[in-house]
Length: 143
Image (cartoon, helix red, strand yellow):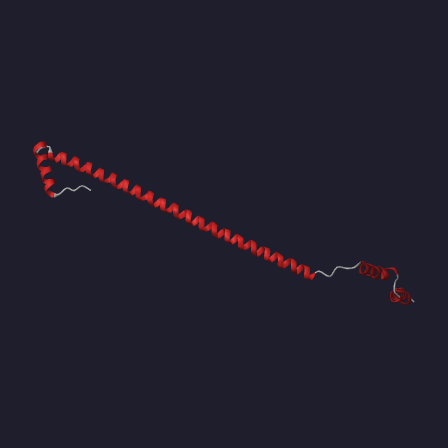
């Protein structure tokens, strides 16, 4: 930073000894040392603040990169899920159409209705016999 050599420091020390005097020179040197230390601490604080800001800026860039990548992955997964869902829905609808019986004609509907109502309107001979035998049994047991 400063280009000061040993010979220049010796010249400054000799001039300070002549101007300040030997009695006050140690006190002035101590004060200058304290000021120099404060200056170094201040410079180091500024350097660390700048370093932290640079790191923070890098972390922000990294965060935006990660968020962009996460959004891209989320978009891709959502797209894949939607495509798979629509594919499964189409498979399910085609399977449901394959399982459904063929459509009935009005003649088939009338024939089925006649078959369902015919046995209910007229009891069979076997049913008469069963009814008669159950009524006859208790009478024979009583006698």
